Image 1 (cartoon, rainbow, N blue to C red):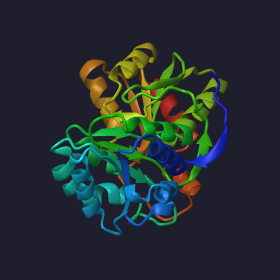
Image 2: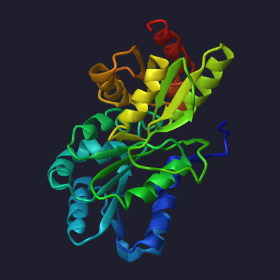
Image 3: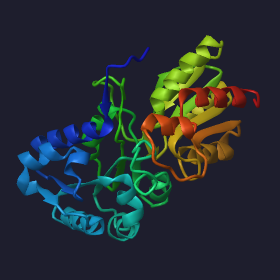
Image 4: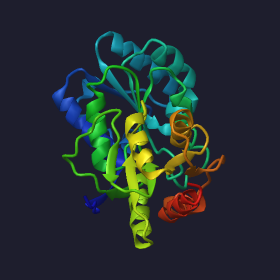
Length: 316
């Protein structure tokens, strides 16, 4: 199947639309926001369901505690703030009040990665997946476009247990069909190939598809796997692909340490040792700049995936 750009939308709007529809469909769904209703696109839910919306102000730790308490009464709370403030600022509360007791809280984190842009390193986050991945029982979902983010938002409401849903600020290509099934923990093979596996997550999935087209022009047949669920990792899908290709490139908008690449490398080291190259931020903080400029600066573009693929194939 050839994927085409349907439109350009920000993934946070996919979250907002999905949350609003959940509000219409499920009275147990409640939402909490730390003074960022507009940024998280929670306006529609807040206006339609004022008795189920809680504006906590700039008090992220309290928000997590409130959400944990609401689950005891049978509610399904969705918390909303920037990814940086959804993780590092409140890690203790998430660990103690949510993860330790397996509370059914959905931690929804916008403005993830460096594509937050001009706000700079204090608001960007490149270590959130690493932190959340270390928490026992935490499910981590990093969708790739508007449609997949909307699907993920709705699906996690029916999933019992804590979830970290990660999405972004800028408008990006929408290319996943609205009716494409979304299943937690199940990867999607977007393009089949035999020479190299490209495993990508989040905004880097579209870059991976572009890279596959560029490689095709060079006679390289790349397989592209969309890992929207980073934990639990679809190990079966990864191993099936890598068994066929014999090498893999991982691509993510996250620190090279602690992210998807390390999960894939660990899996392969244990079961099927093959060459791996990682396209990710190389152990660095972000900085202020336009999203596209930062993607270029930190080596997260399609051309960087092509270079990694060409390099890893020489090591087969």
